[in-house]
Image (cartoon, rainbow, N blue to C red; front, side):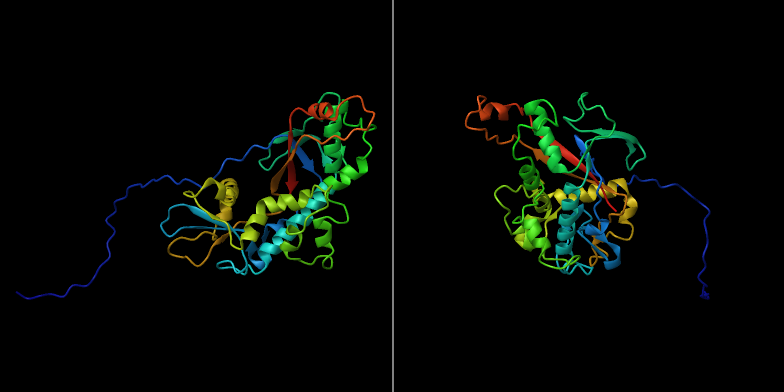
Length: 326
């Protein structure tokens, strides 16, 4: 039998079926903010993500087994991107931004405004949401005034009833970290304007005894433990809840705009690049400050006990400060 050589061919069998799977997009429920104060000052988006430098505060990736997301705060020499010093730059930028926000005007009874989803929302924080404060917009000149007004409302019956308080100015300055010896002010003076001082310069320094150091402590709550440990926080779906803060942030961002993961994720086929968590101008972030029971120091002849006045502030106020990135 004669063997005939065959030429390879290509044939379409003209059959077609549909394949339909379900993709679950990464996401995390937004912790619905309550008692919202709308900040009038903005925070630079570059504090969280700087596209020109190809750097971000948070990087994320999928593990080699395709078994969940991991994330970490960017450290010096982060994987696949020039992270050198960005972690410290970010800490400094956030501290400077938060300080400006805290000393800037805050609207504690904001009228209707659109959120990121185009939904009209009215923000009104306690106790300024009470009927006695009936203006649609109620501006306080800074967070120190918010705190002072909150205490005055519960102790004396009105946010402006501060005549009995003798240390108004000192209280507000301390709440805003404006004493000359406080950590933030000291660090801000280390270099020229716009310089990126090491975050440790201000994290390590203690403020004065009367200084609340709010900006420094807010940044420290996110960054300081990580910096002090000398290693990035890494967390995924299987690790302890205490280590999931950065992953929760990634899930919230990607869950609201999945396109921010475009060309920014990796898997076992591309393990040399971690994704950068992108933040842009117009995004909104929240930080929380819990105003706890005040310490009241009365005069020697005061007939109402200090503890009695303190107890008039029966419940703590947890303020969510709404910050727009610019």
